[in-house]
Length: 120
Image (cartoon, rainbow, N blue to C red; front, side):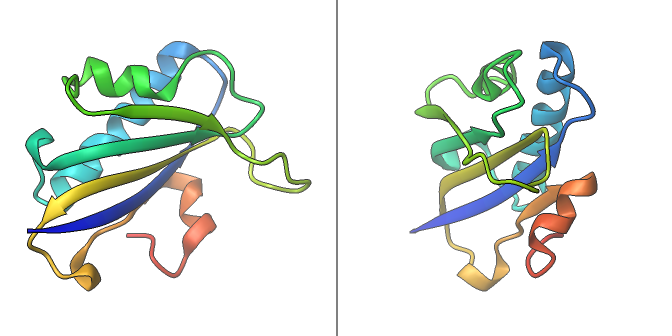
């Protein structure tokens, strides 16, 4: 079993805790489903949020999904002029037999513009 990394992101419409929870949950669910993963396959997850998001921790959504025994950490993205606002990014480390080229990175909605080269 290899250690792999899965990327993803979502742009929020507004900075509200409930909306963040909904959107991050949708992102994590898509990452798991599109890569045929269970929570047992997760090693750790890094979340970043742009500086304009401060209503909640993105990791709170993971806990509500039942991801309770996986190390999670949240950090703030760099405040780069012209960067897409209200974005939560995910970097999940997983155990998988899939070749690296078969890992599905998930960029939902407008966040697909962030990585057109790998967005699914």
